[in-house]
Image (tube, rainbow, N blue to C red; front, side, top):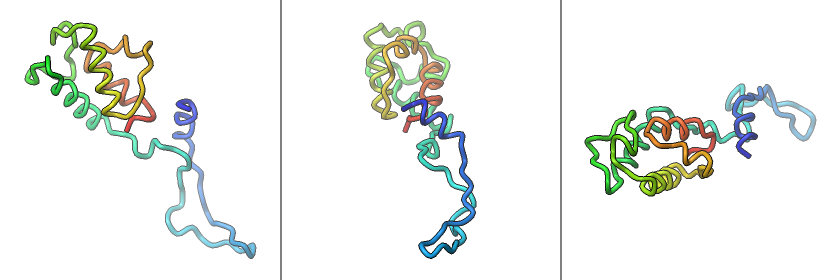
Length: 125
């Protein structure tokens, strides 16, 4: 499913006209091109992802919001433990309506890595 979304976001299908029942064509009035079956049209900008990831981290009970920046490391800079890290990943999944596989989740230990993962995920909303 994710591979399909990645592939489909790179294809544009030009639409010149639509054939009507009588075999005649009618010009397409909305646009000269359309992207079909792709959820990537509504993909988040990098700035939106940064803002929302930072908001999730700042709202975590054990975190001092004034210390949260895009470069902060969860354990080294914020003093969080591995269970806190799991809870933050779960909060990010909920915020962006996506599922982060366990193999990937264990690698996300900083705001930068969380931002990059979400920004590059084709289904992040």
